[in-house]
Length: 182
Ligand code: NI
Image (cartoon, rainbow, N blue to C red; front, side, top):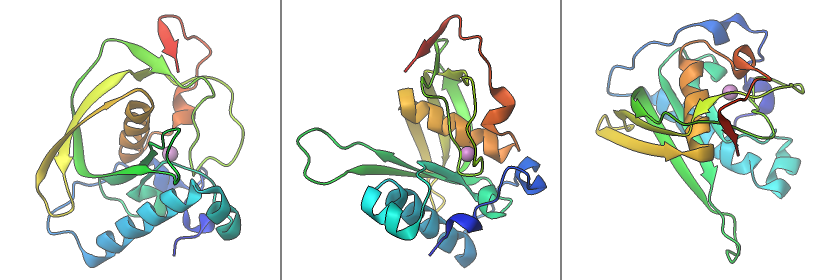
């Protein structure tokens, strides 16, 4: 089971590396890492489990955050609706992702962004495309295309940046003219 301390901190230079394209088939180590990432992200968003396991809440994690210099990431997006009895999540795993297209419209998270590797308060907004279309591969190597909007689009762009050694703190700004906050 992944622990919070297994996730690299922003001071770790490995987070600045450009990750390598994955050659299929995925190794057992990569498959295990993906399973661990899914479990961590899911558990971290369920309050009782997060408390018990001492997890910081997060919805996305890139391989490099575990020191694995490969182009893949996992997003576990909560989609619970009001009348659901249990929390519900959509899980996205994407290998070798590429942005196919994006909206003109820009958005920013009103509360700011967070990152499991950035364990401090930050000030400012991060401008992101409101909608993006991403292609890539699933864990078996089948081609996939994912359309993401709003919060999910922000998460995808945040994780895509990790693959190129970019942290959201590099992009913090107070200027949100022509940006819709969500
Ligand atoms: Ni992050």
